[in-house]
Length: 79
Ligand SMILES: [Zn+2]
Image (cartoon, rainbow, N blue to C red; front, side, top):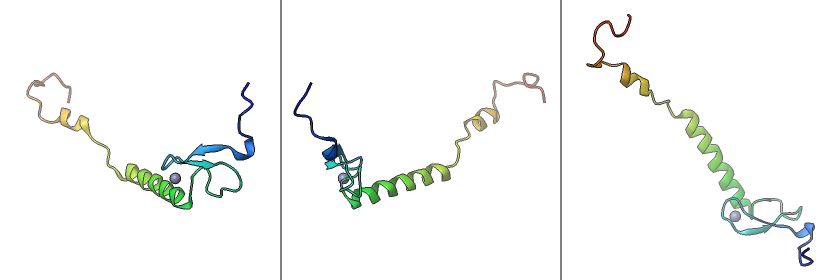
């Protein structure tokens, strides 16, 4: 048992963005972030990241295989 454990009211967590320790309580409106700046930056990064993934076109690898393949002679693939 650790008697030196901090009370739950002053629990400290690491800011997900910069890694700085911050108080995770109602006194910190930006929890679990350390500041409004970190919160907005992290949220903005998350939003732009998801947007980028959505806008990213799917790589059509199978398209390369289906193009003129010399090893695929006539009859090997029913047309
Ligand atoms: Zn931070």
